[in-house]
Length: 404
Picture 1: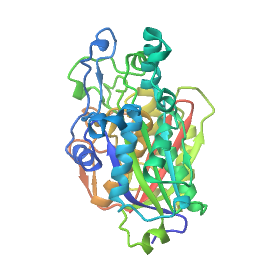
Picture 2: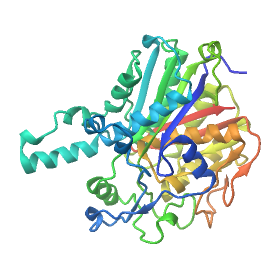
Picture 3: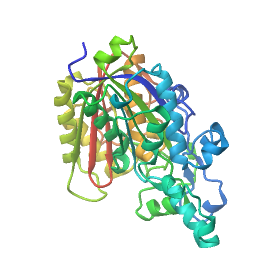
Picture 4: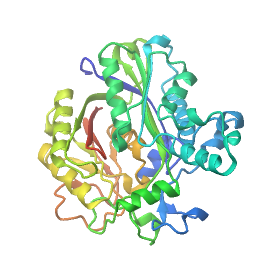
């Protein structure tokens, strides 16, 4: 039974390093595929980082040329994924003023910012694109999607580092609960694979510098993990007020039953188990569930030692060790602002299909991680509720509870 105030998830869309849509991403996760590849661009030759997880398809190739030219890469990906989710939901007939968009991002249009700055320095103001400002605005993806789909109930943009996509879902749920919207397209997007951004993350020792087989580099919870792998992509969900969805006969994947946003107020980049505990506990309370109800956890698990251990401690303290844990950044890399939505989608599909993707490259589980991390092969079973975590630099913590 859907509890009062829960948001039904009626559509999903995604573009990731595993595929150009949600079905191919999901099948890639279940097959244990890796989207991590060597950086072969000329600009990467002098970088200390040799791998990244780029998209399988250039989003510009899927759009009319005139449309693609005025959009930042992140905006292109957001529009394509939002269109997929919208069609998957059956393109609901909803009053524009009751239809909102919430799309988070960590870095905004950084590719356009850096690219247009290069143009300005090299060729002067006359060569700048007249769309430079719309391309660099962090709110650009939400704005373009709202125009593309005709949403007049607000276009919002949470910017909370790697928790942005998850926070967008939490805000979307709030809009449904408060009665301000019947339908919300919510998600996250990131497209920032550039020598400057990669070098900047490398300088803070966050990225793996291994140059072995790229598919083996991202290894959450493994004793040989060496840092995360930068990725790009987008994830979108269509959230609907339950009564509205039922009245139109919509089918649903499940519900976004609870959410919580906390701030660690501790350190600008370091992970903090205490803040994560608060987020998870409040999300459970928000959903009206107990720790024992959670059968699946999609971990944030970026493949850094401190981050993995802090989250493992927090999950153990709040949920215990009974839940099946999956860490899919082992396959997609870290899609930054998009990762939270794709993680929530993964958790929801795991409940729907009764299958939890295995964590890739987990050859030797860190003995300090006292959790049931799924590895080797996907695990089948029947679970009614899942938790999805997202944590970002700045102490941003978001936990989502999804139910079957």
